[in-house]
Length: 223
Image 1: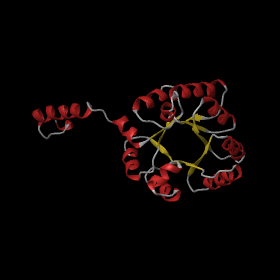
Image 2: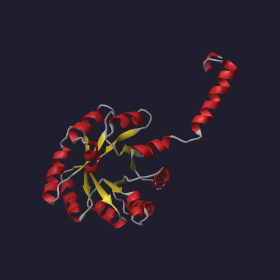
Image 3: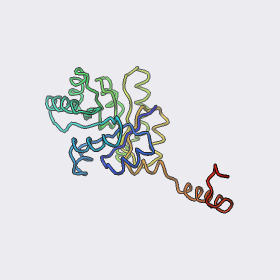
Image 4: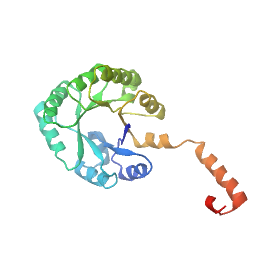
C-alpha cells in the first residue's frame, strides 16, 4: 500500500487529517520548520503523540560531505522512526553513499530530473523525492520525470520508493499515484482538497433532509 505523508509540522491540521486518513508520518524540510518557528525535537515529539508509530523525514542542513554524514548519524539516533533527507547534489550523493554503509534510511531530496533521481537510487537512497510543481514552474514536466523514474526503478530492480513532493493541486497528485509510486507527501491544503468536493455537502444534506421529512429524528436502525 502506498505510504501517505503530510508535508507539514502543523500539529492541529496533522491531528485533523490523521483522524480520517491513513497517515504514515510527516516529511519536513528546513523551510517548513523555520516557517513554523519550531525545532526538530519539539515538532517530532508533538506529532509522535498524534500519529501512532509515525515515520519522520528530517533533512540535513550541513554543507560539506563529512558534516552531512555526521549530522545524518545524529538524526538517525533520535528516538523515533527516522528517515534522513539529503539533497541529491554532488556532495549529497557522496554523503548518501557513506551514510548507507551505516544502514541509515535515506531520502534523496530536491530531485528535478530523472537522471538525478536514478543516480541517487544507485547510491543507495531508499526514497526519492522529485519536486512535481517546482519542476512544472520552471518549464519542466514533473509527472513525466516521475514516470521515467518509476520505469527506471522497475527495470533495474532498484530497491527504493518514489516519494513525490511539491504539489499544488489534486490533479498532480492523482497523476503520480497512477504511476504506481510507493509513497507520497502532501501539503495540508492539497490533502484537504483531496477529501472535499463542492458537490458532496449538498448531496449529504439532501439525504438528511429527505430522511427528516419522513422519519423525523429517528435513526436508521430505529425504523
